[in-house]
Length: 171
Image 1 (tube, helix red, strand yellow):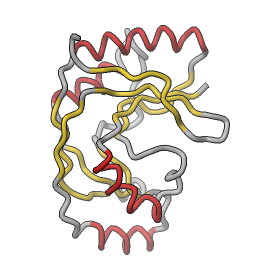
Image 2 (cartoon, one colour; image 1 turned 45 degrees about the vertical axis):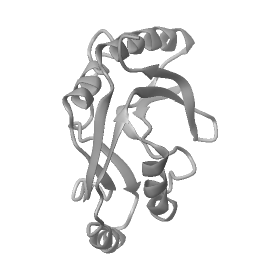
Image 3 (tube, rainbow, N blue to C red; image 1 turned 90 degrees about the vertical axis):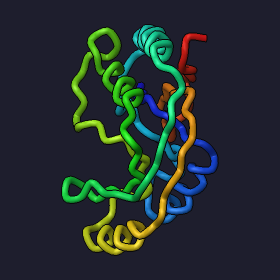
């Protein structure tokens, strides 16, 4: 089964992201707006129980932290994804790093970690140019406190749902 680890932002930020995603993101109906900490990976039932235990320990290492979204950016020319750029805090960097360490999932990330919330993807070059041109003028300035992350699993229809939620901090 496929799994992933994400942070879901507040409803306010999700509503803002969805106002663009419903037009520009074909994954709109499959998963709410999110910040990916660990990309898709496969595990069986026994493995995922062990991974969940390890993620619980990772969550204990980090206190709740401030999430700051401050502009619209793009991954072009690598790909035509447009996103809300998230300030890379030490906590986000640490969580991402710990989820790829030998004692959790022991794999190298496919790409450098750029914290973001996708608002448009799978665009043609012309679509990307037009949409990014208008969205990059948006004044995005949002801050909130993150106190949890989520282990998700993928359903047969391609949508994602929460397997387990992990609260940050020692409590």
